[in-house]
Every structure is written in structure tokens, then in C-alpha cells.
Amino acid sequence: MPEYVCDMHTHTIASGHGTSSTIADMAKAASAKGLKILGITDHGPATRAAGTPSYFRSLAHTARYRAGIRICCGAEVNIIDYNGNIDLADEILENLDFAIASIHKQNLAPGSETANTLAYTQAMRYKKVRIIGHPDDTRYPVDYEALAEAAGEYRVILEVNNSSLSPEGYRGDVRPNYRRMLEACASRSLPILMSSDSHGPGGIGDFTYAEAMLREMHYPSELILNDKPAKLLEYLRIPEPDPKIPLYKHPFG
Image 1 (cartoon, rainbow, N blue to C red):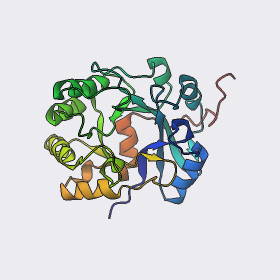
Image 2 (cartoon, rainbow, N blue to C red; image 1 turned 90 degrees about the vertical axis):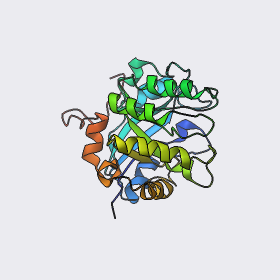
Image 3 (cartoon, one colour; image 1 turned 180 degrees about the vertical axis):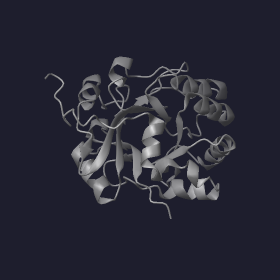
Image 4 (cartoon, rainbow, N blue to C red; image 1 turned 135 degrees about the vertical axis):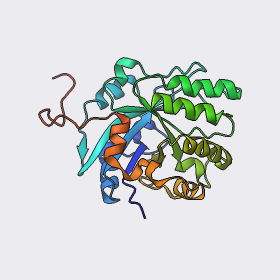
């Protein structure tokens, strides 16, 4: 049984949604569950009551090791139009480790299959967008062959979202969409990533439904990155922090 030790899509109090957990709380929970890498990816500013540009500027300066695990500081940016534009400026993204680009209904109304696919694929052109979040919503039809082709071209990872697949998921019956997506990825030998999308510490590292989906699809284990920390960081282009630089440096000196 693989040991899945990387969860790159989680949310703190900065995302709202009722959780009061800090980064420190999340790190302690991840450490207790045996994780080695934790991604902090609070919602971008287009989400109501979520992270502001100043929050993400400060986040770039937070410690990259907490409670004995590696913290990767990112953002779940919102795709805000069908040209793939997102809600954080390049100058802010540049100082974060990575970004997940996602579509949320409050920021972009469902469009045609062509329009939705274009929104995702154009978002991949941003250098820091390394993951496409939950490309599974039944309200947003997608051409998964085109999506996988673009993911391979831009070297972006497509996510299998545990929250979407759970019985409490609100994006509809996403399983048929994941079947099509995983078939398209497998035919191109593309790596994928399971994510908890946990809002607060409770669901960190829980891939129950995502793992079942991958088993059902017989997805090649060598292409699942959650148990390959070094390979995951390399694929996301996240270097090890320079040991000569303090773990925390205040942005104003």
C-alpha cells in the first residue's frame, strides 16, 4: 500500500468558509498524520471573505518548515473569464511557491464545453499555475482530451479532488468526468495528484474517495505523485529553500 505523504490543496482561516485554523494548526495536524509536504492554498481575492493581495504578499515570507514538515505556500486562484485570466497579479504569484487555478461558480458562470476548456487551458500559461483544481464540475463541461493535451504541453498537473468525490460533494456526480480525464491522462502518461481540498485540519491527507477512483481506473502507480515528495516538488518547480536564508524574513526588513 503506498504511503501518501503529500497534500497540496488545503485551506486555512484566510479562506473563510467557517474554519478558524491557522497555518500552524494545519502543519501540526499534517505532521500528526504522517505527511511530509503540505500545500497551503487559500482562495484568491475574487472569493468573498478570502485572501487579500496583502495576505498573499505576506504569505510568501512565512516559514517553509513547520512541525517537522515542508510547507509550500501557494494560492488557489480563481479563473475569472474564458480567456483564463486569474485574480492574483504576477508580481504576487512570483513570490509564492505555486498556484492552483480553479473555476468557482461565483466567479465564472458555466459556459460551453469550448469556453470552459479554453478557460482552463489559458490559465496554464501563467508560470506559477502548476495545478488545475477540481476540473470535474458537472456544470462545466470540458473537453478532457484537449485539457490533458494542454497539461502535458505546459507541464501542469490535473487534480483528482477528494472533496468533489465525497458523498457531500456539491459539484454533481463527477465520477464520469474523472473517468474521461484519467483515460486522457493515462494515454499520455501524465502524472496526477490527489488533493483533500480540506478546509481546516480535519480532512488533511484524506484521499479516500480519490484513491478509490484511481484504483477503479487502474491508474499507473508510477504516475501518482502523492507518495513521491521529491518528484512532486521537481514537477511543481519548487526548489528547496536556501539554507543560508532564515526560515522567516519579515517583508519589511
